[in-house]
Length: 160
Image 1 (tube, rainbow, N blue to C red):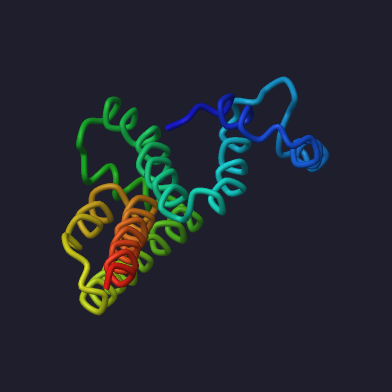
Image 2: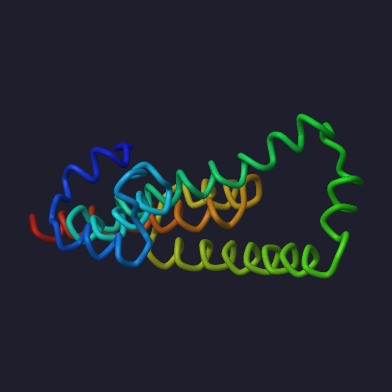
């Protein structure tokens, strides 16, 4: 993955950078922020295609949640009772966990249906990713796999 500095160098279009600074998305001094990197990736996905965009989101989708989870495991060990207790500690925590749970069920159904419909191989990978890392990892991983599969079909059709 490219660093934000390299991405900035590739997009020296003064108008885009100026607008990003105006909107408060980018900062002239701190061009390595995650927000800046994501915005530049959003601009860049038209150039590179959705595969690159989904790939970046797949990395963020596993890295960011685990940046919180791994230290918690380090402090508490794998204590499932404590995890569940903290997850339902207040209404907003319960809301977030129920939202993620429903999203995961919907995503697994979507992966199974769309994977079968498009004949995507290894659809078990994003399902395992969803169950172990979360929807933030499983969804972009499946979309990346689907995009790669669709590109292969397009290339095959062009050769015929």
